[in-house]
Length: 385
Image 1 (tube, helix red, strand yellow):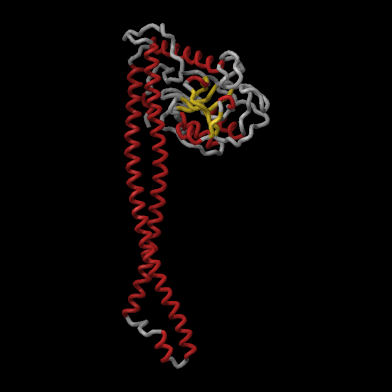
Image 2 (cartoon, rainbow, N blue to C red):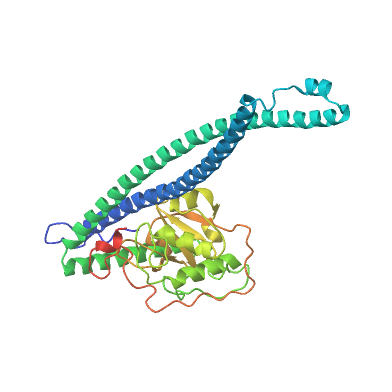
């Protein structure tokens, strides 16, 4: 985001609005980076829990099989001790009055011997499998505990950084907050104007001056200008879901349906459209198909900051739907409200629909501060899990 005017008047504490806004940007970015790291650990922990449960279930089955095999082996041992099988098949044949019957009995005895051998082999194999599964289950439990400890450390870090934001905001007067909002809006407008004029989204000037197009975009045919490029069927469905969440609160680590963080909104929207994508903004940037900004279509994801710590969904006409920051709500923002890193497409093979009507935005979709202090309040309890 472009910094607010350098000539901003200093605050009573001696810090300029520019310095305050810079501090807020820094604190929010650090908190969001820690939050996305927390989310990544949460995803790993979910997978580890599932792996540990699968191993525990397999171990229980293996131990049950070992018990059955031991029971069969014990039965054979008791029979041998009691002398029920003391005569060899050869001796039985010599003593038999009916040799053919003895041969038939010998066949049965041979099958019994083979069954014993198979039982012993099954017992030994089952015990080895159970031992291997027990070791794997123990390691899975240790790994899960380590992930849980790491997650707690990351959660504490996020909460500490959010407390810094709260302390800064709570120290400001109403006039200072109003000045911050004015500076933020001015900086965003300047950044958006430069971004659109650069031609990053296509031909320079295709969007005209900021605000020249409605926030909902424009209708257009396939292959039109960047402002009218239609989405895929899944992209349209994902965008519709995201738009219907406008007004819901930001809550770090949340994936809906009552609250969202930035990547919780994008991953949930695409899941609603029938496509599972990675949970965090870093994973979305790393694993999804990257596309030029000039090829953006509604439903694509715009990723922000050098470390890919924020993500939003492209709405069209140079705007995005996003869960901005703690203390804010899901809203429509200019695409350049944060420094753009690039864009990814969850469904690179999806064909654009032949006819497209942009979603109707609710009243107040673009209102409120992207930094989360539009109501003049610190983030407060809405940020904690």
